[in-house]
Length: 371
Image (tube, rainbow, N blue to C red; front, side):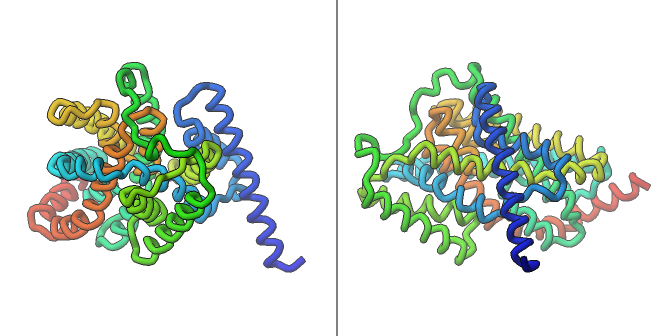
């Protein structure tokens, strides 16, 4: 057997082992009635297993990307002409919510930097509630930013949101009265049609590949959302997504999340552990408060508002919205708006902010204080 075939066989074996642990974690969490068990179970199981099976677990990003496509389809089915019109009305609220959470993350990151001595540039970049990959890339582009700190903060926030928001959102305190506001599919259509399924499959895969080509953020999620939404708005009935396919998609996401946070890296960071955890928790608490304001101002059900404001990934929050019977269109709209705002507006603003005398003066004062 050649070296190439040995390596290929080893990778396949590692993927198989990872899949078995992920599925067992999902089954275990289902038995314990943990919400979002097909995401949280694999994530928790692999987070623990990776500490004891170093080098034996492997989950390529391509599998996670493939899993994002059906999730993007699910979210795209909620984007009807009526929901788009409602999104237009909610634009001021989306902008205000996004700006406020960014301002809050900056203020809290300053406090964290002051208390821990971690460079302010790193805590600011690590605290921005955007997409993980986008924030890591931004951190690499900025001078004086510790990319390890940024990655650690971002992964910790994401893991905290993935585990805490479902528990909070699906608790009796918040889920009461959520109703069945979620808009999934077109309703009243045949559960499955081979021709429609092939059409949507083609459009979703093409949307993902085109999105990757044009460097769309989270292309394998946003591409299918946009492609599906175009067909739905054009009046093409959207077949129901088979439950086993959605479960499989969640497993691919949970497995990827579970292997993102390396236990070995935690021990090396020391004071960054508490700082990252506090930052993620503070953003969740702020989103709960902001959701209450949104409910009071716009009449959006609190559970929907909370999931829409949560500083997590659009894929996980979309799945949670479906599980909680929240308004899927509202959640998708707010999450998508924040992604695009952070992608296009935040990088140039952050670069200008870091170049200001005011910011550099704060950094010098922090350095003197540490000395």
